[in-house]
Image (cartoon, rainbow, N blue to C red; front, top):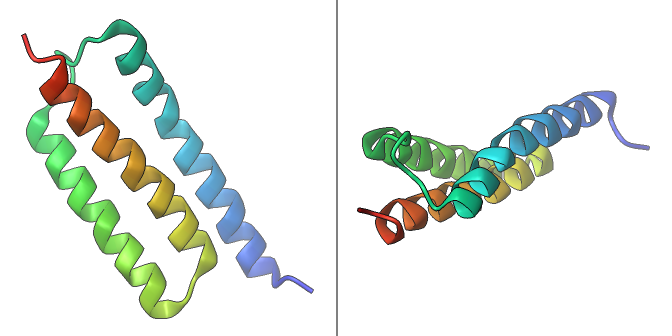
Length: 86
């Protein structure tokens, strides 16, 4: 049986990860990154990578899954920031 604390972690992971996806989609559709701060994106991606490493170190599936998906989203936004630069 799954631990209730892990279920809470999975719910939190799903919510926080999916909350970030509309920004990625909007950026991809509009091809505009003017409102995205490059320094914020770098800090965000580094923080997410730290969370991902932490998740592996403590063997936490919710932390690993959420931050793996969020890291991909962050890298996509960085890619878009450079690709759609005016």
